Image (tube, rainbow, N blue to C red):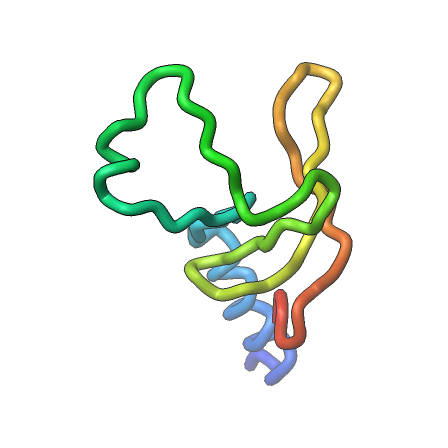
Length: 91
């Protein structure tokens, strides 16, 4: 019995579904002179380039795949609610 092309394709897709990828969420950025960076200490506040409620960027292996909003779970952990898939996003 031979495999049909669609089953072979499905097997290939299934075989990569357990490969780990790195998901990174960028809350914002800040450019600082080295002297100011060096002067930072415990309790220092770094103001980022985004406002509360603005979408954050979601990257998979350094590729922008989506945007989302920061949420807080019932357990008090940060989470991201995906609001937009970037063109070429998760495919």
